[in-house]
Length: 364
Image (cartoon, rainbow, N blue to C red; front, side, top):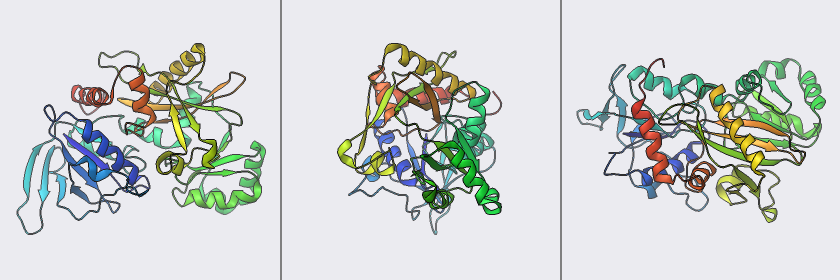
């Protein structure tokens, strides 16, 4: 099996951390792991199989340096891996039975690598091409959620042309939503490029920051007073309705100085944590699990997903987003919620691999 990680997106380092923990959890008696790293420049290389290679070191995230032997699929319609060592004849590693793409963000989580695997006839873990693309693009994700009748916060999409042609009209649209708002790259994750905007004077800079990651920007009303609740979803091995985990809650440490769950709070300084299970009424947990399964099916998801919610004091519940390749370290919310639901980390990884091995490529 091929574990694919790294990639060209701004979430490269997060992907490497995820890969290290997944490799650590895979049973070597059942699966032979071939670690394939994708450098920030897009080179595919045969990486180290040591999980310790991908640990966070002194606050710095690991990365694929791209100087190792290049590796590639033999060609369209072929699932053979070929290794190219400098100055040596290319050698074949053998057929890939299943690929586990642990890529976060564009050029991996967005349907691109899923399309490559489909073309090569390689079975893979997780959502297909369309569901991955919809889940990555917060604009179209919300279009699909609206069609499915799922409640959401007020939001607006800002395309580069609209901002260039008439920034005053964009500012007016955002002001009509009321401040504060969150300004986000439409196709990014891990809170990278996101700004909390308190007033109109901060808007232009926030849009510019988001555009550094994506020319399409999403502006969303802030969920004032709401709690951040998330729920894990898994495709069942037996088919039928998706499985849902007990919900968890994202909680910020008041002493951390963070006002929202940004990148540093998630991965660097421990300013936030996931409380699992969330301390919420049973009927609210049931509503969240039902809505998570509906969101999963609305985008046509497969394998796994994490669905994030805002839960307001008046009982109102809105869907924030779906993540088709959620953070997957043992301390990430998704594995923690499944552990609390009776499925530990190694069993969770095995469940996903078994799903992929039972699923073919192509239309389904």
